[in-house]
Amino acid sequence: MPHPVPHATAVPSTPTSLDLTSTASPRDASHHTIAFVGGGNMASAILGGLLKSGFAAHRLHVIEPLASQRQHLEPLGVQVWAEPAAFLSQADLVIWAVKPQVFKAAAQEVAPWTHKALHLSVAAGITMTSLAEWLQAPRLVRAMPNTPALVGLGQTGLFANAAVSPEDKSLIEAVLQSTGEWLWLPNESLLDAVTAISGSGPAYVFYFLEAMCSAGESMGLSSQAAKQLAIGTLVGAGQLAAQSAETPAVLRERVTSKGGTTQAALDHMNHEALGEHFQAAMWAAHRRAQALGVEFGH
Image (cartoon, rainbow, N blue to C red):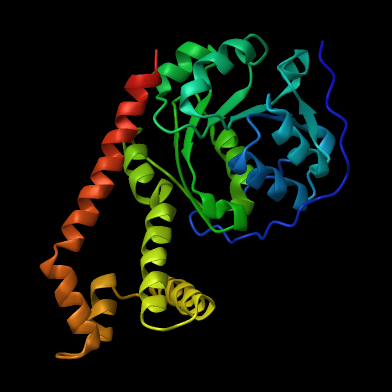
């Protein structure tokens, strides 16, 4: 049986965020044993939040085959493993933070020990049907988080199958509460929309941010000044939209004076059909999310 990789005891600092989607506080998860399959960015974000909230490191296990990533995890003080082993039979919750391409192979190695556990998958496109077949476990939850979870400002869409109890959902919420906001979806198919909007969404924002910075530099601003103005504008506009009761359309109109500079920019965007192209791009992400389930499932 493999031994856990030695580790240090440092705990990372991960900002927390108020959950606006739940009317009750998530229950305490600290007495549960949680195993992560995969130790990348999303696993690290959840681990950091759990540790900061006081979760005992010895109750957290991470299976990560890459030595370099294991070294990255060691300072967290959690139990780090190179491969699955019998310790998994003690896990109350298994969090699948692996790429869709390797999920089936990983499941075949882990499943013999985890039939009784609650499972949470953050793998894009892998359906409940595939999860049930590969894991042979009744209690399954799919999640689509996004990378702002790394700073406690994530958005996560969740879907649970019928075997998942209210207590199970509360445990999932307790685990995710430090990563940002979440919402439970009534249909599994809606996770593809979540993937297209918020799952892939940070890349759209960074793409737009790149363009704003490049434009600012071409107009004579320093790279530092352009970056500050662009990021500050995106963050500020986002906060304004979050705190306002008005729709984005109304907020846009309030910034736009007839015949002014904003109108000139928006006229150009409309002439180039930027809005339509942007929506088409998100539909492309939606189709790819659907295709992942077909490509890597079963």
